[in-house]
Image (tube, rainbow, N blue to C red; front, side, top):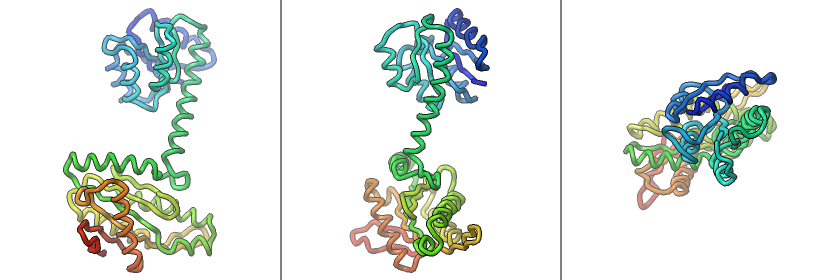
Length: 307
C-alpha cells in the first residue's frame, strides 16, 4: 500500500485526484487529504507517508515557499507538485527546491499521475541511499569524517549559545595492527565493528560517534554540566574496550588511547580542536595506552591530565 498525503484546498481538484488513485488496479493507495499547509505539517509529524501531492496555492502558503517549508518539515518524503500553472520555469524551480516531479492539473492521463508517484518514491529512496553513502562509514555504520565535521560545527554553536561545555574525543586503538597481522583483515574488520558497538553503548543518543578512518574514532559529547562527565565516559570506554573481543574461534585483546579537549574552554576552530585532541591522544599512547588525557589550553601546551 502506498500512503499519500494530498495537500489540496480545491474540492473539485481533490476529488479528481482521489478518484484517479482509488480506481488504480495496479497499486493500492491510502489517501489522506488536508487543505492547509499547517495541517500537512501536523500530519507529517504524526505519521509516515510515502508521498505528498502538493498544491502550491493554499490558504496559508503560496508558490515555491510552500514547497520549501514542506521540504524543511520532512526531508524524507517524496513530493510531487500538482499545479494549475503550466509554467516550465516554476516546474524547474520546484525540482531544484526538492520536489521529485511537477505535474499540471488536468493534463495527461491518469497513468501519468500514478507513474509519477511510483517514480518519485523510488527517486527519493535512491537519493537517501546516496546521502547515506556520502555521510556514513560503510563498515561500522557510524558517522564518517564529512558528517562528523558538520555535526561538530553545529555542536560548537549550540555549546556557546546554551553555555554548556562540549567534549571532543579522539580515539586510537592500541594493539590493533597485530590483530590484523596475525588474524587477518576480516577479523580486524569484525573488531572495528564490535568497537563501534561498544562505543555507542558508552554514550547517549544526543552524542555523536564517528569513524575517521582506519582504527581512529571520534566522539562529540554535548549538553555536559562539567568536565567530570567527560571523565566518566572516558573511563567507561577504556574499561569496555580493554575487555576481550570474542570473534568465532578468535580472541582479540586491544585497548584505546583517548585525547580530549573541551570547548569553549579550548576556544578554537574545528581543525585546531582536532589537533589538540590528537596531541593529547598521542601523549596517552606514549604512557602505554588504555588511558586518556585532556588537552589544557595554555601557552606551554605541555600540561595535560592523565587518567
